[in-house]
Image (cartoon, rainbow, N blue to C red; front, top):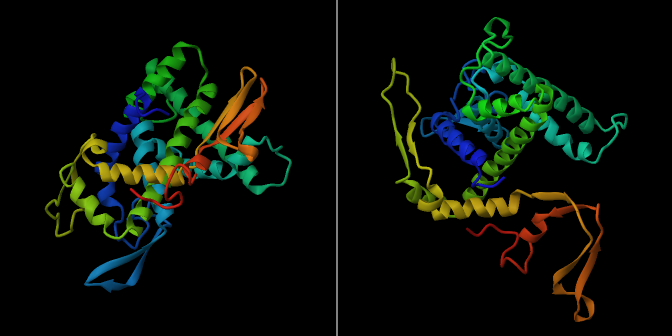
Length: 322
């Protein structure tokens, strides 16, 4: 997905607004799951110890962050009622991701591989959830409010409404729209969930880097502390997250690009349209470039992480050097 296409721009705006609302509330420090945020449940445990009279929480950081990412994006895209109606949606995305390689290889459903079975069942549930959403959007567009199974679709994002309108006008059924939406939601949630976690880990692992980044982002992100209500402290609020962070914060951008290089592991898959010869950039045995004949109709899979970790392209291929 290009950073310059309209879909990416819409996702950027949605993500920034969600970050302003949710990041200050990463952890509530509440011992009751009823009072915890949705992304905290089963991921945060309060310990009995304290540090300088402050509460201490033990967290499963990867699970916490990936759920936070999902709870930032999904309600902003699909409406605030979506996760309330389909509470297992995010868990199903991760179940699908765990079994995706088996589904991509076309493993038959009768083969006893548990990850494949769970992934197939999760995909079916995700399709059903997204199909219901599009049916409700269709009925809402036709002013058929008495027949709505799902109460509120008014705050579904304009991005999703425009996609729904275009598919509806082209005669594409809700059942056929669901896989198209799932491609985007799976890619955004899984990719961002991994990258956010690894970017934080790599920043914390580099001595002095956290302080330098804080100084750099100070002018682009503004935070404030609201007055307490009934003597209960309110979480900080982010007043401004600039959309030009990549310009005003080159160090932060460099950390992101290094994380993208080392931890995204992207693949490109395509079908060859005509025979051609691929010649390597480097010389093989005997001082001659290697050549490969690729035939029409062949499926080509390119693992970009091999180039991203190539010592001929990077001086420290396995290390993050922003």
